[in-house]
Image 1 (cartoon, rainbow, N blue to C red):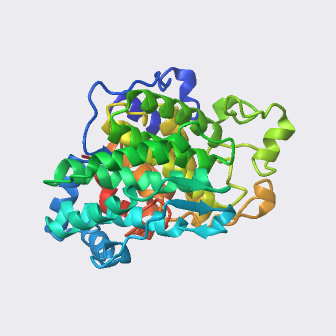
Image 2: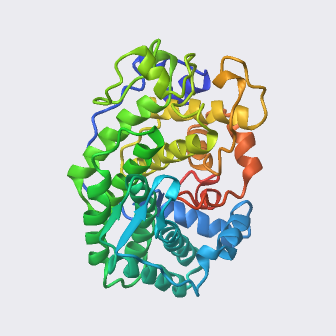
Image 3: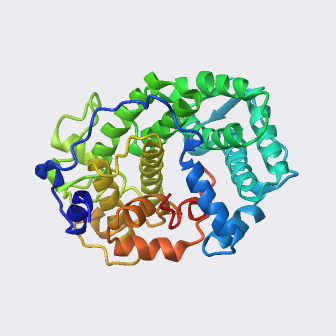
Length: 390
């Protein structure tokens, strides 16, 4: 058993004090790995082998994706020049269409790779080409979040198609769209709720990989690490959660207010736990997704405080999602559940690869299989990451 694995297996709550998980400075890879956003070629090959063999849960997950509206070969893209999204997508001028077309492109790319049916690669290209020929901007109050959500899915699809399909003539135009319409909107982050900035950094990291942009890759990873530390509490943080540099949160009362009025802090509590588990799930999903992309790109953060925060967040939220009674000190004794299909990527990394026992997370993850899509930016995690040690 490795030194990292031994510490995690013992359930160390203050590994930073042991000097085992100090986070290294971000450094873009000398050469980017492709496909390399959320899923790598070895991971895709593993999935393809399992599906072809009819093995579970991969075959059921593949059938679920194939039967979804996202995989329809008759899907018509609905691009807009300006996507306008207000709070909670009101108004919704192209918001749902953009997110769902991006998820559809990713779905088609996965099906293409697993099945070898070129129609799905061509459909993914048609969706990406339609948007790259049309969109110019995102506007209104939810624009940063919308850009992060759609911008997380597009590069997943683009990476698979560009590096595994024979021809995509407009891939350069698609890259220009990602840089000018998406990356410019998300790279400087947001001081809103943590799930916003985590999704924005997922988009920024994925786009930077596709563009092979080392400067913005490093910038996005630095902001991601700061936000992860400020989103999930560990006892080793001290009496109060960490804050993002420049957030303006200086006093205890300001921090408690930002944490939805929660004043007792325990391992795995997130900045949005007392808001609701749905938004918390968005944050957890983005943390895991970025960590997975970084691993593929040679910058494994699972053995750092990022991995420990992810482990604790998954375990804490899973426990209550499974029905554990809520104590009076936690969110005034009441939680709004609904974590969503967001646990598979982190569970696979920490349990399958590192051998960490995660009883509650495992129970919830296996109960939710096959995990589908949240129709925002999470899709088909069971298919891509269940038991996938590649």
